[in-house]
Length: 113
Ligand SMILES: [Zn+2]
Ligand SMILES: [Zn+2]
Image 1 (cartoon, rainbow, N blue to C red):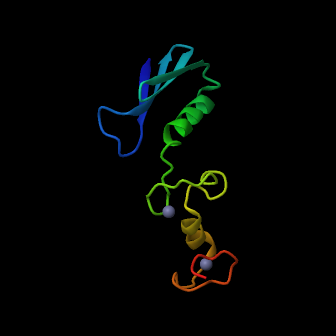
Image 2 (cartoon, rainbow, N blue to C red):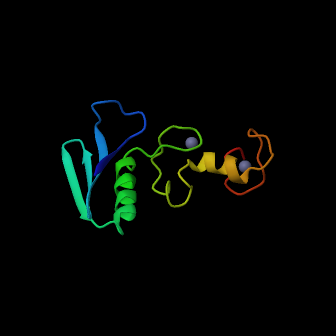
């Protein structure tokens, strides 16, 4: 029997949002707290990975932080299309190649173009 606590990176105690995984025999409880809201899901050991993933996704969703530059993004495509990066960061990371960042790489939509 043990509890696991997840918090938002950079958040300090007392945490504004958290996910607690409580295991008590066959009973798994995943409790997400955000502000004053508490969202609790009870599940089995088979489901717990998925339920925890969803809770962590929801925990981090309000602050979409770019993996490349570390600043927040407001893009609705942030998670699905650009692998948790700004479009610009994604482009320079994966598409711009060895071209200088101040010079267009030739791809349509290149921010340096
Ligand atoms: Zn970025
Ligand atoms: Zn480019």
